[in-house]
Length: 239
Image (cartoon, rainbow, N blue to C red; front, side, top):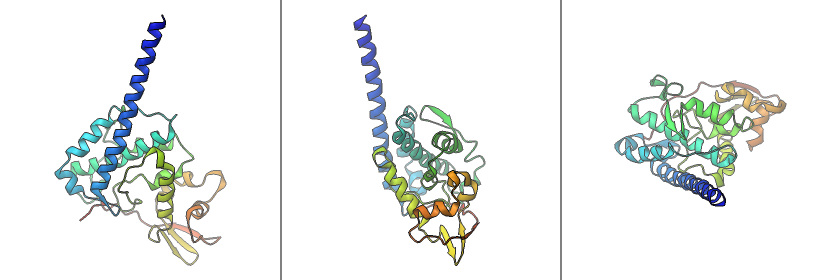
């Protein structure tokens, strides 16, 4: 009986260690991929298409990775990187193109096998991240849709040990970018991200301006009127 318990324990320990090793390897290889193919918030889709094996191998390895909300930083980092990688995959499969919206069902119909699931990009964002962590509005500044209207993609992977600092940095960069938050006297034009996901930014009675001012160095004046500028879906490619 004791021997059986020991065998079961060792089996579980081995499985857990394997998953942990696979996850660490995923973050390392994702980091190398982004460093190679991303510059100044834009992706070299042409280069990725010319050597798609690196991306395919990375996504193939990610199919069997298992992450749980119990380890929130690992879970979030895995799915943020996966989203950004799959956007690149979706673009490369249809490249050249001018916008991800040129592909029917790019976000809501095309399913990918990853993390032990078959899922769409929209489901990663809305079901696996936003629904699981409803108080984390900073997701919107690290999930990159492939359009220039998105906050820029970074040339490194999001990692569990640095995730909070990375989320904070990217949120501050976006909200202090005069192109992203366009101020003219007491009027401000902001991204449609704030319109589409307004409930994420107005939790606990705060306004959109309240949320922005949490991260903005030069505070928006009290009584600032908010409107939205059109979202730019032009592909975020290196030309």
